[in-house]
Length: 137
Image (cartoon, rainbow, N blue to C red; front, top):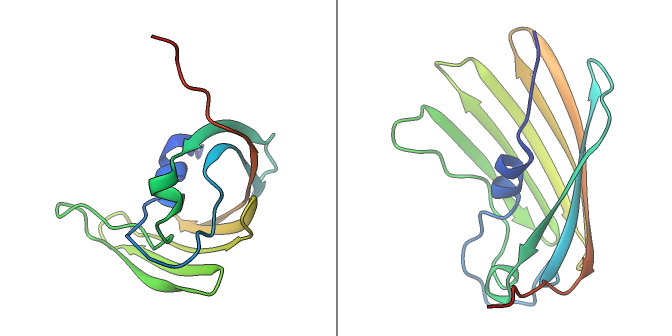
């Protein structure tokens, strides 16, 4: 069985952010995000860039929210600079545990996915690489 995780979907999970008033955990700007599956088979890392706006950086990371049509539920929370949560999907029989640590200009995380009797382990990291490029009009 082949597992393919789309980097943009994971980025959406990383940055599904509710409002908050405290100092941001992430620096606004351009981020390089790297995702590497390390088990059951080590894969080459996938790297892509995203732009985190000032507004998004002012929000606090939280577990993803599923669609009403999904039967997936996430539980967990942010404590200090560490986000930990678990997700369970009944119909798909998939579950995962996720932990990220945010450090302003970088983050590190581990995602463990249980599916079809297999465990998939991913190491994720991000680093701030500069200001977002504003397209010329």
